[in-house]
Length: 122
Image (cartoon, rainbow, N blue to C red; front, top):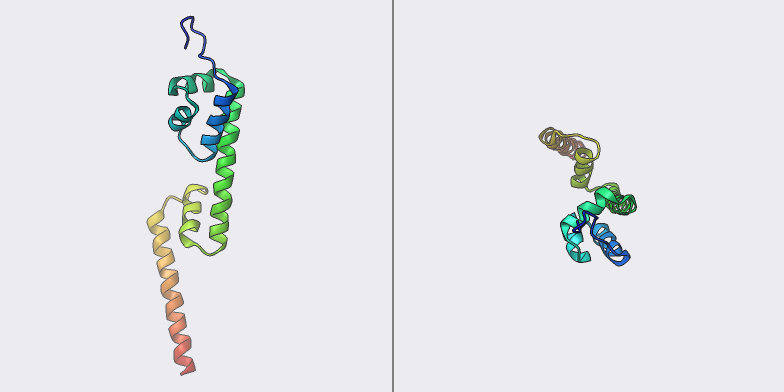
């Protein structure tokens, strides 16, 4: 804050730099540094400036949607690791060990089924 208790000014250029950094996934600290403002100024404006808060939140939402889209694409392409990540992070499935075990069982069953089919062919 300034000497009179007023928040330190933040320029439109600094706000645009904050948004750019957040869109790339930067932390608040890194975004503030990139924009040339202190972390304290960042948090002051986030708390006291509704326009700044809206800019930060909408940019973080854009970043999240970009990454969710990438995760969904990877999962649709058969990336099991990505599917597990989505289940854990997005849908609250926190039993990672149980999920790994179930996938292992499914892989074992598929292997046994494949072996059985091969024996029947031979």
